[in-house]
Length: 241
Image (tube, rainbow, N blue to C red):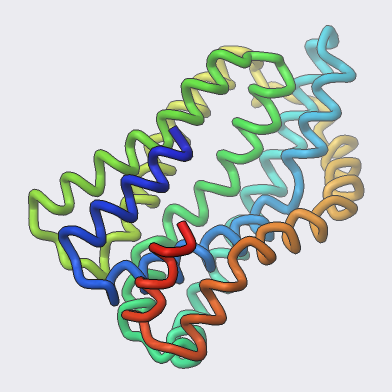
């Protein structure tokens, strides 16, 4: 679903919109992915490890989840605020008003994406709920494609298309929170402070590598946007796909 979603997104956008829209869309997506790594803070790695080790300890699991959700929500909110502040400078550097509008449309998605990463890659994966993990992971991309088709049907302006990620992550957050709350009554945690400190300590050790890996996979799109136009960025991103 991830592979097909990437292909269909680019084909559909390039068919119904101009190349500059596709270019701006992929630049916004690149910035979104890179900053989402900062927002998640690497807590998903810590939660995955901790749950796998303490799988049979109900009380410990509650502390682990609660101790991760509190900081990740804080980190995600802080990252979203930073991106909001940087919207004007980023759009100025990329010389694109389309990117500016797109970044505003994707802010809600950025906030929830980081939290969903912990709930999905940390909690569900840690509990070995592999079928549910696959379903929710696939659902993310199905909603994105569905949102794109709705956007085309309603003739939504191309520069606002990144809102489909905000739609997807918001819906996914509600479903994942419900799913995780069925597995563990994490809100009843009595000793989450212990794990909060552990998560922060462990997460920062894996944050930098994850951030650099995501940046490495997106740096070409960002550089093309910096040196060239949105239109050429769109043509390049389609060829790169």
